Amino acid sequence: MSTLSNVGRPAKNILGDKIGLLTVLKRCGSTDKGASLWKCLCDCGNIIMRDSGYLSVVENRSCGCYLKSKYDITGQKFNRLTAIRLDYIGGRCKEYWLCKCDCGVEKSVRKDSLKNGGAQSCGCIIPSKVEVNCSQCGKKLERRPSEVHDIMYCSPECKSKWQSENNKGENSHRYKGGKITKTCLSCGVEFKVWIKDIDQKYCSSKCYGIYLSTLIGEDSPSWKNAQYYQKQRKSIEYKEWRIKVLTRYEHTCQKCGTDNAWIQAHHIKPYAGYKELRLDVDNGIALCKKCHDYFHSNYGKVNIGEAELSHFLAEDQVEINCTK
Image (cartoon, rainbow, N blue to C red; front, side):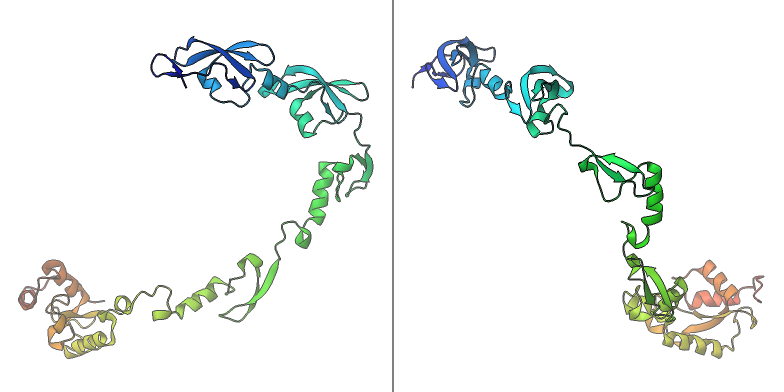
């Protein structure tokens, strides 16, 4: 196919082509952006100028008459309404068409209401109202058939009163089954809970606490591993070592000599640094809590041994009230 010269790249020659309702007559230069400009004849007789971008799509190309004919509803009938002309364009660009009803009345109706069947007449075919009674006070009411329900009210007061008397318990729209009876797993007493709390197993927090007190070791919800919770300091062997050390020194502090206080078993060589001596009775000595705390606060807890203990025992007695 031959091409016509143009600024930039060559333009496609569409002279004589039929594009939609348009017939291309001749090329008339280019647009500011370099697109080819063509003179076209529409089937309706109008002559217009269109660029090559517009003519690149074949479907529904026209001078504008196609869209006008597509969206023009003049003469069309929608139920009992016949569109006469466009009356005006309202808010949000909604079209209002002047329509004539079969009864002879003219009325301006929104176009989308005509299309979807929302407007069927000028109002002359509104169904006759039926007579119903208020569900609360029995007052007679007139309602359209579409507005009739099983329960009707004449006023908000009647609605509130009726719902307060009838919309409760099993009749309530929020009813979810009420309360059910369960037996406490701790004390055996029967108690009631809402159906949403069906998994509740105890009647009170006290009973639940009693249950938790029975969860020891691997049965405990906080159980992780035996090494973490059964430290050697809490083992039976460690308790026996402590008793042996205190018995060896007759439950008497070797610093201040008191036996009327809280006596503790102290490791001469640190517990953390000498794993093999942790349960050795010869590695223990009895000290009251005051003297024991004073020793660690002055000599530390890691780099200590027999020399530090000997120095502590030999130094002058510090004035500390070691009695209870």
